[in-house]
Image 1: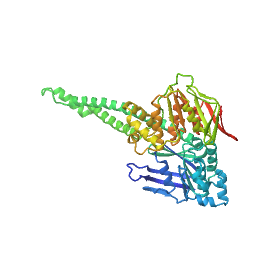
Image 2: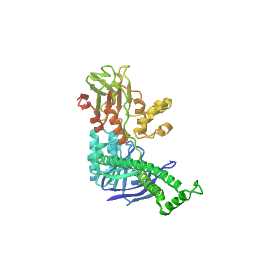
Image 3: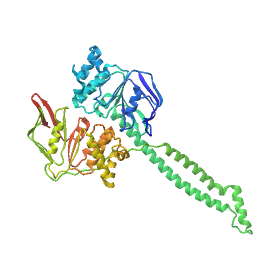
Image 4: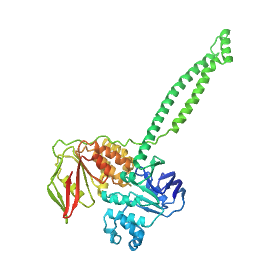
Amino acid sequence: MQLNLTNISYTYPGAVSPAVRDVSVTFSSGWTAVIGDNGCGKSTLARIATRLIEPDSGTVGPKLFSVYCQQDSSLEPGNLIDFASDWNQEAQRARALLHIGDDWPWRYDTLSGGQQKRLQIACALYARPDVLAMDEPTNDLDAPTREIVSEALASFDGVGILISHDRELLDGLVYQSLLCDGARWIMRPGGYSKASDQAASERATALHDREKAMREVKRLKAEAQRRSEEAARQKGKRSKRGLDKRDSDGRARIGRAIVSGKDGVAGKLSAAMDERLARAESTLSENSVPKRYDRCISDFGEAARSSIVARVGPTRLLAGEFCLNVPQLWVSPTDHVVLTGANGTGKSLLVRAIIDSVPENIKVAYVPQVVASAERERALEQLRKHTQEQKGRILSIVARLNSDPDRLLDGDDLSPGELRKLMLAEKLVTEPNFLVLDEPTNHLDIGSIEALQRLLVGFPGAILLVTHDIRLAEAVGQTRWLIEQLVDGHALRVG
């Protein structure tokens, strides 16, 4: 079984440029990753593949039964009631795969985000589609839930289309990856790591070839100029203008040179060089490489001069009936701490306690997991108030996180990913001593996550990072704090 998209183009109503342009791709049985920067058209392509959007041009075929499982887990699946009422083998299999409680479908609004996502996926698998598109299925999920989702998706044997920034999921589940590079869509074998390594290698080769072509064009231009000047000199020598009318020997010499063609050699060589230069310039134009930022953010921040930047405990943190037992914790000026734990175990509660304990002389930069509308307006207003120099530094960071700075200046329709990048950039330019990030990879594309990872690894000050991203945690964390659920409550273990 396979699904073919041929010469697909689509422009959203009112948009200036198309979301996708002239894309041709084949999705076969098994999982295919769709990978690219925020806004490159990944979700649009998946919606076209599942026939939720009719393309402006191109074809999708054959006509297969398709399901699109969207990113927003708060939206009830269309077949939720059917699934809740059905206890046949397929429904029970989906319940078992996703660990679905019997009452979950009847109280969807009261479920946690992770529970809603599992129920969403269960309903999608229960429908038994030929084509299943999953849009960020592990976003906001803790490690145990990610494992459940991964195993469930691996059981699907139809045509799977996966949009995700979860590098572990991409490497473990998919067999081919569709990468968007500028306006080009290229299918590569393997998961994200293999496909991106191949893409990076090909890009390096293309850049090398382009630089070589540029050097050749430069050399030929210089040589063409030299030969043109030589041809001009030779032409001047063949001219009888300026000769004395009585200089019969000079006129005869010029005449013999013209007849023999000897003095026309320079002109012929110049014309041949012009042809070589034209061919070299044509080769250079064909060796175009889409512009990419190097995904490297300059160094920001500095280590505090005090011995401790935060200290908490031993204490019990309470929120209603919830209780978190915290041992004595401290963060030194250069500590990189990763906080992990299942959803609902009190990570955000601990983060607030840590921030409250920071002395006034320590400069803290905090980017929360959930950004309220008021915070969005504050971030945009702050951007407008910055000096041109500060604004330039902020927009430079945003650009290197693969977002268009001009969209931030417009400020009317920022995506969650763009807003998160803006908030992070505004915090970084304050040169903080202590960076506190709560699930910073939410809504970011993979290139942005990798740029963020390099920044955090080299950050000179202290870091408290809350994340479910295994690779990010392994790269950044020097110290681990894990919140575990005990019979009588929750406790934090330092390791």
